[in-house]
Amino acid sequence: MKRLSLAAAILACLIAPAAAQATKDVLTIDAPNDAATLDPHLQWDADSYGVYRNIFDNLVTRDASGKIVPQIATAWRTLDDTHVEFDLRTDVKFHDGTALTADDVVFSVKRITNPDLKSSQLSQFNQIVDAKAEGPGKVVLTTQSPYPVLLAQLVKLSIVPKAYVERVGDQEFNLKPVGSGPYKLREWQKGVQATVDAVDTYWRGKPPFKTVVFRAVPDVSTRIADLKTGRADLVRLLPPDEAIALKKEPALNVLTVPTERVGYMFINAQAGPTTDLKVRQAIAYAVDKQGIIDALLQGLGKPVNSIGADPIFGYQADIAGYGYDPAKAKALVKEAKAEGAELTFLTSPAYDRRIVEAIQQMVNDVGLKVNVVMLDHATFLRRRQGTPAEAGQLAIGVWSCACQDADGIIFPLFRTGSTWSKYSNPAFDTAADAARSTLDEAKRMAAYKSAYEVLRQDVPGLGLYQAFASYGARKELQWQPTSNESLFVMDMNWKR
Image 1 (spheres, one colour):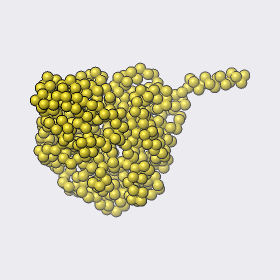
Image 2 (image 1 turned 90 degrees about the horizontal axis):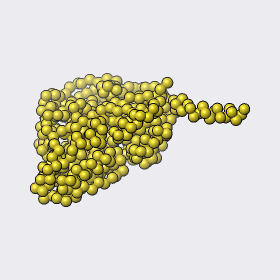
Image 3 (image 1 turned 90 degrees about the vertical axis):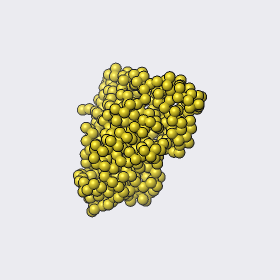
Image 4 (image 1 turned 60 degrees about the vertical axis):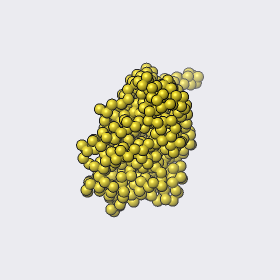
């Protein structure tokens, strides 16, 4: 009888994995890379953001429809063209028990806009020239000129605790961040995983999982195996063919959503053979965008003429791109006397290796020699933001500013002085500056048209496709991804 009971118990465990899954306390997410930083004022790459956005609250945020809505700020009003006043919540505490006040908001604004911090996000906030607390629950931000993208950029402004950061310093804060969000950091094993625990007293309500583990799993086949076996509940960055294959798995869901993210190729205009305009043009003509979308993205992408896409304000769909013309590309390489010139192509596990290799072959076929250099993502970001000599001649990218405005795309990527830019043209700078300095939408669109025309002529980068985001999830997980690609754990739960 005892043997029968034991067998029955084992059988029950085998046939009811879903019930066990639905009641477990730990959510495990596989991402292609470890977080590059947990300091929200430094990098804004997807793998870092996926972790730290659950540790911190932002001044404002977006809802599932993409609308900008309150978070720490409860309301805001325009005082004049360069001053915006924000009302703040006064019932929020950081994980160390201290109250979040207007002083912390002011500190956060001034910290991310301080050039000494060397934030890769600086160009998205440097129109803010002052922040002042007007009592414990009110802040006024001052911009250099009328700045139409202020609220959209503030979606990415996480509020950090002034006293704690000043006490421990920037390096320690990155390793042991303290925020006011729904989860607090338990442990960050760099290169392996970050583990966060729920803050049961979180002001928006009790978080849905006691613990969330964000694991770095660069190999896509391992991420998929983890998902199938239940070692992972959610995996990010599924290649299109894998996403299609996983749809046949009865225990899994494939979640796909078009995004404002743009797949593009950086072309270094300030170092190596790509300083020659004809070489850059040749590369642009060498790449078969539609072929990449059809063969490698399985149609989960849309070709773009430049670095932008239709949902983004300021994108100029009517400016012609570079069509696929390998014969013209070969002729330009010969005119530049660049046959056999070696180009370094930087990439990381965050990007589809097949796309990188396809571009490598296409560019090789027109007479250049491309050497792909695979880096861990943190090193990739450091080199891309380094000197022109460090950045390689080519690099893959899938860019989003989460602001739905060209200001957050072409300004940081190409404006003279940006950490991302390896290009300088006064005509582009003038147009980009004008577009971010007026509230008149017609004038902004005209300025962006000029800016995109300059980029089209100079080719410091090549737009490839509007990206779709694909996730694999256990059927028991209830979640709907949005176009801003945020992994807001508060929006997830087990199905009941």
